[in-house]
Amino acid sequence: MAEKMRAMVLTKLAPIETRPLKLMSIDRPVAKGRNELMIEIEACGVCRSNLHLIEGDWKRFGAPSHLPVVPGHEVVGVVKQVGSGVKKIKVGDRVGIQPLFSSCLQCEYCTTGKENLCESAEITGETVQGGYAEYISALEEFVTPIPDNLDSEHAAPLFCPGITAYKAVKASEPAAGRTVGIFGIGGVGHLAIQIAKMQGARVIAMSRAKKHLDLSKKLGADNVIVYQDSQGQFLKNLKKEEGGLLDSAIVFAPSDKVIDTAIKSVKKGGTIVLGVLGNVSDFPTFEEKIVKGSVIGTMKDMAELVSLASSSGLKVVIETHKLEEANEVLARLKKSQVEARAVLVP
Ligand SMILES: [Zn+2]
Ligand SMILES: [Zn+2]
Image (cartoon, rainbow, N blue to C red; front, side, top):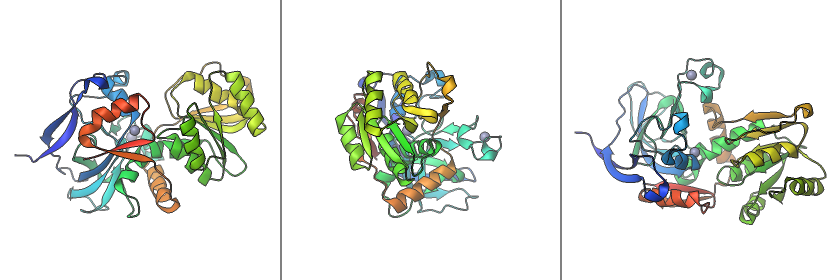
């Protein structure tokens, strides 16, 4: 008989207030496949996309692919078992798993270092079991070892908000002498500020909330500007404060209006990176601006970020909760009551 573990299981898509995640005892995974690992989870971040999945907002994207499912896709734990063909990872290693659980390794994306775009990708906590549990399985090629100086609770968010921030910042081409604006300062934005600073850019944080702007300053933002619904007034404030428009902008606030404002906040020929879903209306063709989408990141990005976090003192702001509290934590996230990143500890 299989050994059991505790997990917060989603059996039915429903509003989070109805507590759709149930604490259950389910079979513990085993490392059956040649390149498979079995990991004892030490921390799993709570993501807004988990909330969308649970409430059924992502049915149109085919997620989750099946029910019941265990959500959670920013996971750190200790390897307890390895398959017969595993070479790089050994029992006792601490590793992290990102939303990209696996990809085919053969298609045109996988063979050109863009495996995050693979059509056959499996997504942690959506198409395969995720991290709201005591144990998880993973594949050797898709885990990233964690250096000793990063604890598991702070390392877990590197695997979704961290990688999302890292890839989006990279796409915004930060450099000394360039000004990057970051719209939306939460779990992802607070990391993006620090990563863009490390690349030498001047970083401007935009948010409606004063507490987020205060946090941005603490984390090294060179300037902060209150986001407001009056686009004209916002742009006037930006120009006055910065003496002109931005070289690039990154959007982490899921709002068409914010995307439009971000596009208008950059100079002609500038770049706008979208790290969220949203629509571009009124695109200024004759200003030669570039709008780029960005989704999670590749295994190479992941390794770069973990090494950067280990060497640079990247500050990941977290609060920890028990696994059993997942429903309550997600309900607070829905009401924007979570400061930076909530992490579940089994
Ligand atoms: Zn996430
Ligand atoms: Zn592929």
